Length: 225
Image 1 (cartoon, rainbow, N blue to C red):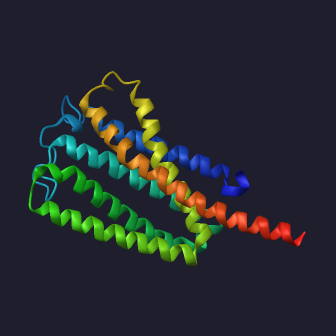
Image 2 (image 1 turned 180 degrees about the horizontal axis):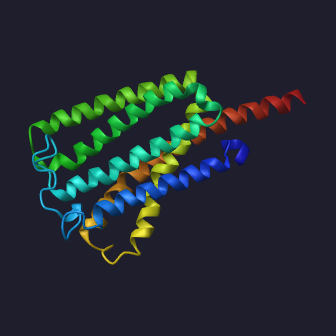
Image 3 (image 1 turned 90 degrees about the vertical axis):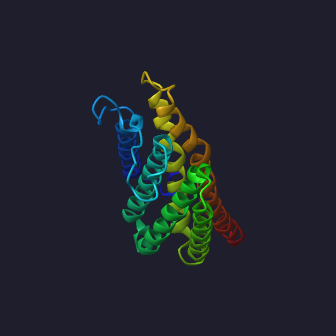
C-alpha cells in the first residue's frame, strides 16, 4: 500500500499538521469569544458591508468559512505532498488545477448557500459555478494525458483530506459543550453532506486512475514472464 500510493512518513506528518490547523480555524470561528463575549459564528450580520456576502446571514457565512478553509487546507496538503516527492515536476500544472478546483467548488457552494435569497443574481452565480466546473473538468482531462500518475496521487490526497479533515473536526466537536448548537452543527453537517462526499468521489477517481495504470503494468509484466 505504501508503494502503491508512494506514501511517506512526511505525508502523515503534513496531514496531521493540516488537520490541526483546520480544527483551529473551525473552533476559532465557532467557539472562541473573539467578538466580546461571543464567537464570530454567533455574531449577527457578521458579513455586513462586505460585497456579495453582505446579504447572507451569519449561519450561511459560517458554511462558507468552514467549507473554504476545508478546500484550502486540503489543496495545500496535496500540493505540498506533491512538491516534496517526484511529482514536483508536475507542480506547475497541479497549482493551476488547484486554483480551478478552489474557484469552481467554492462558486458551487456559494450558489447553494445563497440560493434562498431568491435574487436575480442567483442565476449568475449558478452560471459562473457551472462554467468554472467545466473548465476544471477540462483541466483534469488534460492532466490525465500529460501528468497521469502525479494527478492521480494528487486527487487521492486531496479527496481524502477533503473527507477526513471535516470528519475529524466533527468528532472533536463532540467534546465541546455546544456541539448540538446550530452554530457548530449546521456548518459541519452541511460540509459533511456535500463536500466530504465530493472528496470521497475525487479520491475514488484518482485511486481508479492509479489502479488501472498499475493493473496494466502488472498484466504486461506477467505476460513477459
